[in-house]
Length: 162
Image 1: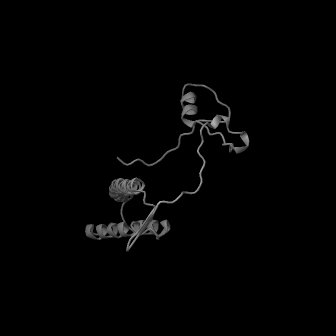
Image 2: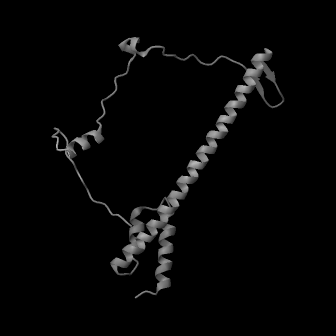
Image 3: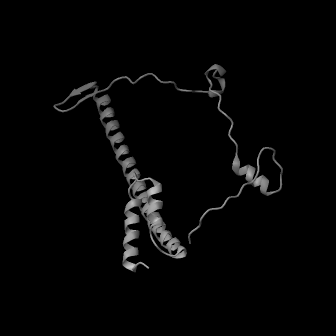
């Protein structure tokens, strides 16, 4: 039987393997299989690793959201500053400013379409869209006993860790 510190060290090694995105799943499974423990204990220890990884993923998700919000803030400031310069150049009648590092110029944008009333645009300019099933409504009706051709309720199983 392995000593506790040896088993702990093996799980730390598993954690390092899991943090390596290039490593194939087969290698991780092989490493897990090499840990000599009773199945129930091994399963609980793997659940601890899963819990730690979920915690890491949640932290990363919050950091991504924080950085996305920061990005939006910076992009809005850039847009505001560009609008400020544009309006000031318009007010003073300047079309071009040549500086030592930058040249600022008011120029025409590429042509684009502005749709005023989509209903009266000829059909040749409309792209047909494939229909999409409302699976939530279908499930709700099936649960109420309504028969719908071409669909069925399926319910699989998965591992839940509490």
